[in-house]
Image (cartoon, rainbow, N blue to C red; front, side, top):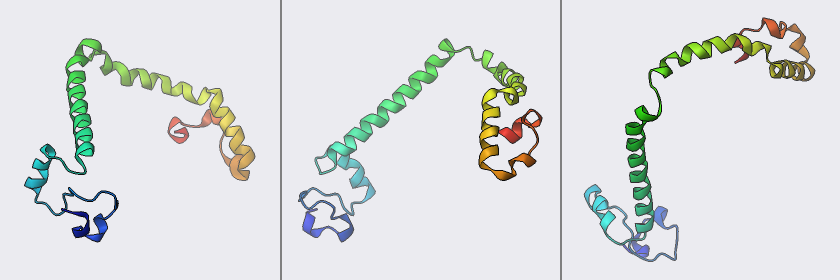
Length: 122
């Protein structure tokens, strides 16, 4: 399709005069991957990137059991839950509370930081 016969909403670039794929049926648009048009480079760079992403994802999934012991990941939630009680004692949370206290006048009504539950903090 030439530029002058395009619908108004597709006339973005007046310097590209031809080889538009406007109003093509899906089958013809799919097979245009193998022809030259004004979007050839765009289509192929996206297609190559997509195929590279799929190949790397499959490779990673196949190699993951060799690199990571999947049975050790089952204990990860237990380890994280063991760390959660120590979070309210972190000095950064005290600093955050002090900054909030100076910027918000009603902050004095909140309980002390040592009494905060982790759910309230997060």
